[in-house]
Structure formats: C-alpha cells, structure tokens
Image 1 (cartoon, rainbow, N blue to C red):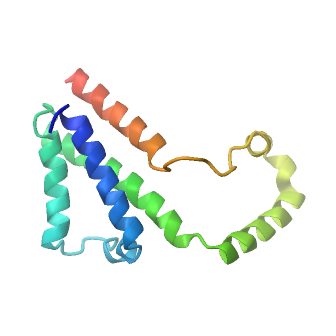
Image 2: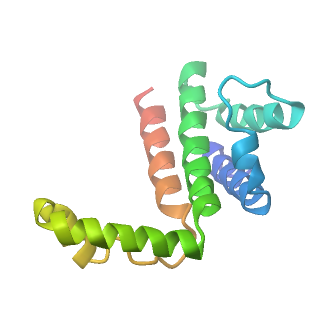
Length: 144
C-alpha cells in the first residue's frame, strides 16, 4: 500500500473498529484470555504483522505495537457496548452523590470537569489514541 506501514496500520485499526461497531458482541466473544484463535482472528493478526514487516522492528516490538492498537480499538468498542442511556443516567446520579460528599478531595479532577474534559467530543473517538500510538511506533522505528 502506498505510504508504507503507517497508512496500512491506520486502515487496519479503522477496519477493526468498524467490525466491533457492526458486531458489538465480538468484544466479549474475542476477549477471553488464551482462547483458541480462529482463522479470521489469525488473519487480523497476520495483517498487522504484514503492515509492520518492513519497519525494521523486532517481531516482539511488532507484536507490542499490535497489542497497543488492538487494545485501543477494543477499549473504545467496550465503552460503546457498555454505554446506554439508562446506565449513563444511573452513573451520573451515583457520581453526583459521591461528588457532593467528596469532590473537594479531587481538585485536579474538579478543574478538568469544569474545563470540559468529559464533554461529548465531535469526530471519530479512534483518532486521538490512534495518532498517538502511531507516532510512538514511528519514534521506535526511527530509534532502530
């Protein structure tokens, strides 16, 4: 693919993200520790290694990069699975109660909340973390 490893991994991560968004049940189905991986899961792993194959990274580093990427994608997918209006309202109610009693103990968090840290964000939730991860992989490649 034109542009090398980075656009290939970005396409890979976005395709993985779309799979989890289309099939939310996959978060739980593929999340068991040390489960037997099927051919489709092995194909995802293979394509990530293929994207990194010409980077000069050791195979262990390539695997670490894969784990960072898939962890980011799965983490966001899990948030989508866990998010619903009823749960959000209950969390807000319970958190407001705890905050009313203990909020003064958390000044940095109070400032972050007031500054909009938890406000809904426009755009693709994958973007920020994906860019940071790929920047880190690029830095590792440059170090050799």
